[in-house]
Image 1 (tube, helix red, strand yellow):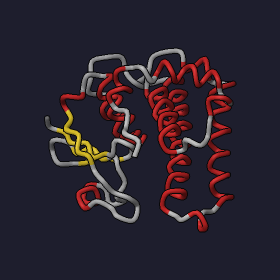
Image 2 (tube, rainbow, N blue to C red):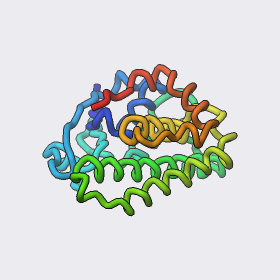
Image 3 (cartoon, rainbow, N blue to C red):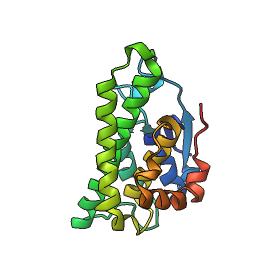
Image 4 (cartoon, helix red, strand yellow):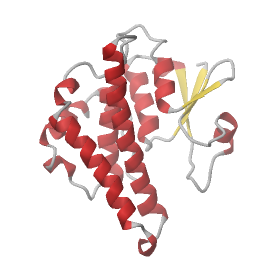
Length: 207
């Protein structure tokens, strides 16, 4: 193994990379280094690899590093022999990247909800902020449910992986929101996607 991925299993941004590694049979080529950190307690190894202190980070065999999950996924997509996780060029590439970006935006909002509810005591939590983050997620889920749902029926590519990991994170960290009742088509899609071996192998523990 010549590459090291610094990640946290519960992070949807790290999880989607590991899902991709399973889907493309690259999993044996990357060492998975689990990092325990919070915004208030960053990890020194991560900071050395990425000055922002954010994970995931991929260290290449030459010692250089890549960070931001979409950058890492785009790089890894050049290393396998299967169908690309994102089309190489043309309008379809930009469309799939846009859908993946929308899933990532929801994920960022879900992580913000987690930080606000987990790291602040109840009396100090900003309810308007929490409501606004959930509204962002709701608008985007509505878009996938009613406008872009047909585009989820193809290969399990970067856009689908990003969405599936977001939905899994909602179950893990925003479990009070019963989103399935509001988005039945997405619920059915996720129920099938969640049974994929790559999703099963990367399911984080609830803690």
